Amino acid sequence: MSFTTKVKNEISNNYGNISENIAELAAIFRNSYQKADNILEIVTENSTVCKHIYRLIKEIYHVNTKTEYKNTKFSKNRLYIVSIPDKLEIILKDLGVLSENFKYLDTPPSYLLDAEDEKRAYLKGTFLMTGSINDPKTSMYHLEFFIDYLEEANFLSALLNEFYLNSRVIERDKGYMVYIKEAEKIGDFLRIISASSAVMYFEDIRIYRDHKNMTNRLNNCEQANLEKSMLTSNKQIQDINLIKEKIGLDALDFKLEEVSLYRLKYPEASLQELSEIMTIETNKQITKSGLNHRFRKIKEIAKRIRES
Image: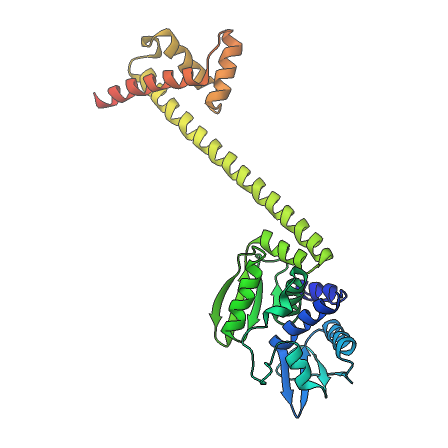
């Protein structure tokens, strides 16, 4: 079972008050209804969603609704259909799909979504019909809605952004996609539609992935620092061996000779580690910056030897 199906199954078991249920049905009808032979049909691939829609229509409009399913060669999944044989115009006008003059409304009337809970319900209904969400365990974070008309897509995006979800709209071959890619915002959307179990699962995976990514970044950083330290050490050893071969280390002053011998003795030590070793063994405080200053002098001497 996909993560999208789990989310839709969960929220299909949640019901609000009458105004919230009407707002949810408004989104469902606006994004999925079909009319043929004086019958309204809502089609979905999810049996739980089908039962949820059936119950909403039955309780609000008291019509002789029926459900059925069929298999088609165009879809790998079974299609579930909610059929409404009467009160068609009353329902479509009441849900803000048609105006009083029976003209299609590009966006739902504002009175359907006066309260925040009604807006949440509308987003829930839209997700049930057109939404999908990637499982955070198996792929990148992605939530999308596939909408037929630009006006509805822009309306949906604006509604999502009232909740600060940073949604975007892009055109597709046969419609428009409203999408959200930020993990934190997708988690917020699941909270908005009251998908509590899905939120817990999503956040657990998100926290695990964030922790894993942070660990990988730290490991990569540590590895890069180690490689940089070894490269620096090798260059220092090359300079010291050149001086040793050409003029002898005893030609250096005491501090430079001392640090040269310790570098040859501890070739894999970082500057910090070497400063700690020398401080302990010589019983004199030698800082990392002090060592760095000495190695710069050794580098200048080696450079002069090479140039001459």
